[in-house]
Amino acid sequence: MESDTQYVETNREPWRAVPADLTACSVATETLSSQRVSLWALVLESRAIPCRAVQDHGGWILFVPPEFFATALQELRCFEEENCNWPPKARQPTPMVENTLATLSVLLLLATFHNLTLLNFTLFGHTSVNWMELGSAQSAKILDGQWWRTVTALTLHSGVTHLVGNIIIGGVFIVFLCRDLGSGLAWSLLLMSGIFGTLANAWYQPPYHTSVGASTLVFGAVGILAAVRVVRERDRVRKRWFLPVAGALALLAMLGTEGENTDIGAHLFGFLFGIILGLAVECLVERFGRPGPRGNALLALCSAAVPVAAWWAALV
Image (cartoon, rainbow, N blue to C red):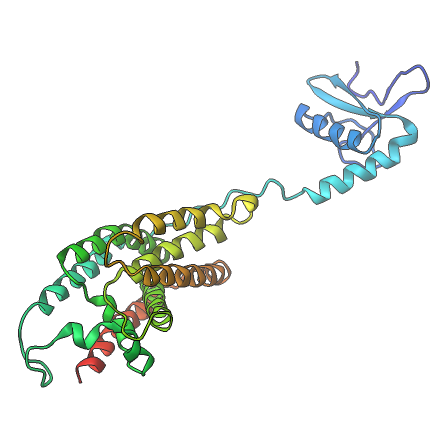
């Protein structure tokens, strides 16, 4: 068969070749790939348009009856227009920030602060400071206006086991989140998820409820990571958008509901606010980009100032 074949003989009248550019006045001098001709044939068959593929010099030409020629071109044009951006291009991986040492240093500072709370010393007129009494998340006192407890409670732990568990388990998620979003933005989100989660838990729990620990913030990190993944993969896995959230919920069920003194409400609210903050911030990051070095430094400074201000309010 010649490469400039425009018709294929049938027992009625010659069928016309479909041009590769789908223009009615064009001549089908270009052949189609086997994948393309198979796809076009499926489109035409779904519209009950007869067609026939003929191989020609390493490529393929698609033929249709002359009375269906104009309709076939229109159907194929609509198909190509609707699917011009499919499959979507793979998203370029977000470059990771090298700040692991800085993040681990913050976690080490949290452990150091825990050791300081075990010492007896006088501070701001308080003889033998009772850190738990001043900074724990007591529901009634938080709702009575002692806002600082939503922050100070995140820095306190009931014991070494509690502290080590949060640092080891939370450290994995926090280090990854800080490398992904940058230290300033990540810690701002973590702190907000912890604060909002503690406040919501205080509203939900009875007035006598008291809790401490960074686990609210840790599960906020889990929620933020799940939300970020949902936003980034929404075009590629629309039918499976729930998978990152489902995985995070499974992790919450596995790690956040065990133990006699586990505050399930704090874990759940931290996770939920992490989801909300993660969705909002990742949409903004996609539109405006991650904060630059100065913006990140400013956010990091504000994140460090919040617990300092909270403890100042608690002590004075």
